[in-house]
Length: 175
Image (cartoon, rainbow, N blue to C red; front, side, top):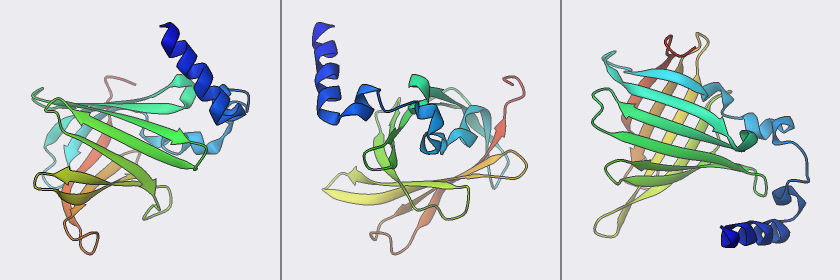
């Protein structure tokens, strides 16, 4: 425990006043609220079939400095967790995603495709020293739903194929 405290003190000293917590309240900085529209309890439905895919609970943690995603497949067979965090030093949000099957990916926020939307993109390492690009778009809709589209590119972004398309509907059992 002592080594963790010393690490944090050292990190704060190297990173400067913002990391040490003296720069102000993250809640007052609009950048920390960029993905607030996604916070809540959701039922997630396949966009094409309307079939229930799973549930997702997204919550802000650490005084609003990070967001945690808690995904569960509809049949309970697998789970996934994301940690989203905002880095004030470079002005970018990042995502780290891990599943109960051991899969993982990391993405960084890039230019959104539409006003109000957010988009994250990253590289996924495959066997045989290959990689693919993976990008996720979250689009808040006027009716309160959120559309999530995940796309992959095997040709460094020249073309994209949708691998997942779903609607998030607020769960009435968790207002």
